[in-house]
Length: 247
Ligand code: PTJ
Image (cartoon, rainbow, N blue to C red; front, side, top):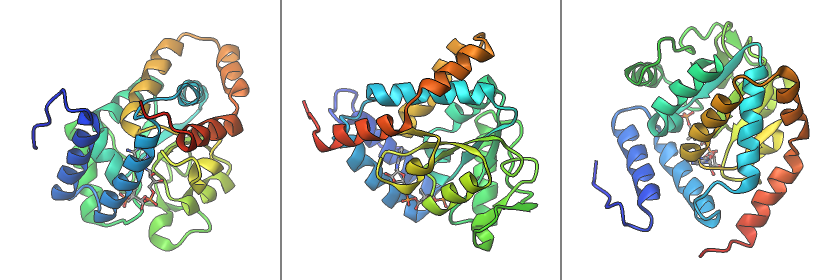
């Protein structure tokens, strides 16, 4: 991987880009993942490449929601696997969630490569390969999930999800936490908790909040979820992007 000097003004963004490139080379990330990364970078640039306060509030609500869940599942696609494999494994440990590979462009090779990559980063169990259940209302390949994974989950974290599947999961009654840098995209608009932030900042921050909230009572966690305002979070992110103060 190309070395990016620490004092480069866009060091983090360039490192993220290189990780996606490496993901494509390793057969983890799809070519479309490169395009998705480019779209994400543009929004992140306008957000000042930082976690804005409303995103931090969403990340705290996401942590509380995951801790409250009976069966939380973290969904992983090719971009997420390339960018935050260790961080996903860590979050799953802290909140007691399953990890499931779920791809927009599903191929068995990529499913296996991503599961191996997650295991190399500490995952003990990776779901998604059984594909013994279907999300109703989606075409065959995109509908595939594990019966004891996403199909059974009450709370699902779906980063960089496509709009159709986000809607179909919501139809199934799942509580969805969506991480996406575009507040106008259908998936965060469908989510109970839209997190408008870069996945590379969002996942570690949800984990930090979850660690801090681990001993909180159910009432405290429910209060955090109930007072989170999803409309406000979407509005705040859009406002920040439109009025971007790029200092
Ligand atoms: O690995 P697969 O086959 O499941 O495919 C995954 C991609 C991401 C290629 C697929 O789901 C796709 O085509 O997604 P879209 O429709 O391009 O949407 C990606 C969304 O993620 C866009 O709204 C981007 O702004 C957003 N995004 C991109 N990079 C990041 C991001 N959001 C958060 N953090 C990022 N690093």
